[in-house]
Structure formats: structure tokens, C-alpha cells
Amino acid sequence: MTINDENNTEPRDPFIIEMEPSDELTELVTSPPALLPGAAATEQQADPPAAADPEFDAYLAVVKLLIGGTIEGANELTKRLEQWEAAQRTAADAPPVGEINTNGDVARYLLVGMALSTTDGLRRQALKLVQASDVFWRMTGSATQPLVNNRLTGIIAGPIDRAIDRLALRGQKRVNDWIELGRTQEPNARRMARETYDNVFDEFIGLLAENQELADLVQKKSMGLATEAVDEFRSRTVSADALAEKLVRRILRRPMREELLGSSGGGQVTAEGE
Amino acid sequence: MTQLSNPLPSLRGFYAGFVTRSIAFAIDLILIAVTQITILFLVRLLLDFFGLDQLARAIFEPTETTNVSVFITITRWVIAFIGSGFLFALYSISMWLLVDKTLGQALLGLRVLRTDGRPLTLGPAIRRVLGYYISFLALFLGFLWVLVDDRRQGWHDKIADTIVVYDWEARLGKRMREWLARRQAEREAPPPDIFSQG
Image (cartoon, rainbow over all chains, first blue to last red; front, side, top):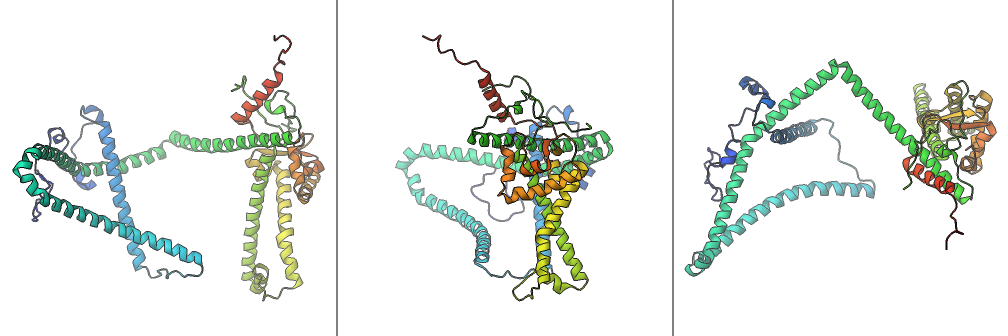
């Protein structure tokens, strides 16, 4: 199997090795399912319940869900950003170019400009670096070719060379397996994330709307948290009261207040009519 | 570390301290400032609406070129000081009379009472507000008096014969409790018998 697209007419990269997926990964690699929820609905594969499936791996499912959620979320965000940018470009009331009135304005514009140009520049530099490293490895490879092919050096370097080749082959095989696994599992993960989002949130909100006890519980929990926060803040101020008083009394060489520990019970006032 | 042998009783009804009262006071001041700004904004809108925009500009946007009359100057002073003072007095007195606490004091769990435990009446409430100004004019000494007074009363409290108490199940924080317990244990421990040693 190859990672190159079948329709691709370009010469294949010599560094990519064609091979079959490894045994341990073969069972995970299945044909990619449809991405659209509609198409998914038509398939209706009638999956057995999770608990009934002996091969169900909760960890793997959660990881897949997380990956799918991340990819789907990023896609949604990108789509929205694209829409907003397009809307901004076509907007009639586009904001005018900023004015420079003070040195602060200059510094601000400088920072914004630097941030934008640095991001673009970094991207271009990264591409250049990749190209440069490719050229470097090709050149060094061709330069050392006579040495490696030499009979004398071949005796010494041959085993090492073969070992490195084997290592590279194994590494490349592993990389190819990962790529293949990613290719097949990514759509699955995305579908899972989308379905989770569509179903679970709807179910949860529906349950919340229907179940009065649950709604009360959520409300009570929120109220409880707010009360707890206020109580915590208040007790900190009570402690701060005692601390401030302690400091001042120490400076003035006055005795400490005993009532705070409740030993004497003095100082307590009860409002009338309670 | 000294362990607390028994759970600490609540400080409900105990005299409230300086920090809590200061925070409550600051919250009240912020509320009054926000209210005043809102009122001024509405006044400005009303003046503009009735075609008195020149007057509005003279009061709210004074510049060197504006012809400042005595009337305008007095109006500004009224708005800046007397207005805010009046608003503060109105707010505090009405809240004390209605619910024994202002909003800031309610948030911090405080309650203002007379020294005999009865709720405030109009006389003590007015005296308390006037007492605030006296405490303020004495370089805040009247407020700081809370730190040294046995009943945690400021000058304004002394003038109005009032106290401020915790109106919730107030308890000290863990560290402060431990410190106080340690001090109490030290005080209650018998003195070392120096004569029986060697």
C-alpha cells in the first residue's frame, strides 16, 4: 500500500516505501466511513451497544472523540473566520486607516505590524528550511556515494550501512502505518465527534428542560457555589479584621481580644425582636 | 501546630472589624458614584432635549472660552459635592431605617444597630451620617478608631450611639483560629516550675 494518491501522476517520492500495513494495525484500518451526517444516517450499520462489544476500547474511543472534536472544531472556526473576513472586506463602512497622534499610537501600530509580518515571515522561512534540508540531504548523499560504494570502505561501512537501512526501513514502515491509520480513522473520529455534539447536547438540554429535579439541582448547585464564594470572601474579611486589630494592638501594647475564640462569650449583641 | 479542640462558635452578633467595614463602605461609595454618574448623564440628556445645550456644555464641559457665571459655578459645586453628599446621606439613612444595612454592608454580612440592640431611628441615622464627615475631616482618624476601640466603634458610631455587628454565621479563617488558639493555650498553660530543676 502506498500513501501516494492513486490519481497522482507525478513521480513517486523515493523515500516513501510501498508496503502492506502491519498486522497489529490492520484490524484497526477499515474503509473510511461517510463524513456527512445524512450519509451516516443512511448507512445505519446497527452497531451493537458499547457494553456488548467485547472489542470495545473506551480509551481508544475517547481519544478518537477528542481528535475528531479538535479537527471539527478547528474546521468550524476556520469556516467562520473566513466568513467574517469576507464580510469585513465587502463591508461598506470599512474602518479608515488608523491615525497617528501620539508616540503610543506609533508603538501600538509597530507591534501590530511586527506581529503580522513575523507570522507570515516565519511561515515562509519554515518552507525554505524544509526545502534547504532536502537539498542538503540529496547533496551529501550523492557526495558520499563513491565512498560507500568503494570496496574497501564497503567492508567496514557495509554492515553499518545495512543496519541503518534496516532501521530506516522499519521507521518508514511505522510512519506509513501511522499515516494509513490516521487516514482511515480521522473521518470516523470526526463523525463520532459530530454525532456526539448533535446527540448528546440535544439530549442533555432536552433532559434538563423536561426533568424538573435536574433543573432544580443545577440551579441549587449554582446558587450554592455563589453562596459559598460569598461566605469564603466574608470569612477572609473577618480574619483580616482580627489581623488588622492584632497588629494595631501590638503596636499600642494593648492586650489581645479574647472574645474572638468565643472563650468569654462577651461582645455579642442580639438585635431586639429576634 | 496547635489543634483546635472544639469547633469555633459563630461570631454572629459580634462587633464587626475595620477591614470588613471599610470594604462595605467602599462598595457603597462605588454604588453612589455610579448612581451619580447615571443621574448626571440623564440630566445632560434632558438639558439637551429641552434645547439648553449651551447650559449643559457650560456645566459639564467647561473650557477656558466658556463664559463661567456665578450661577454655573454654584451649580457645579452643588453637583460635585452637595449632590453627592446628599445622595450618600439619602441612600445610607433610608437603607439603615428600612433594613438596618446598606447594600455594601448586606454583601459583607453586616448590620447597624443601636448600642442597646434596637434598630436605628431617624435621629441616630442622621447623626451617624454627620459623624462620617467628622471622622473624615479628622484625617480618617475617626474611621481608624474602630481598630482600637473595645466595641469596634468609630467616631461616627460614638456620636450616633451605634454599633456594627456581623449578621451572618461569621467565623475566623483557619490560620487565624490556630494562632489565637495557640495564644490561648500558652496563656492557660501553668508556668514552668523553675525551682524543682537541678
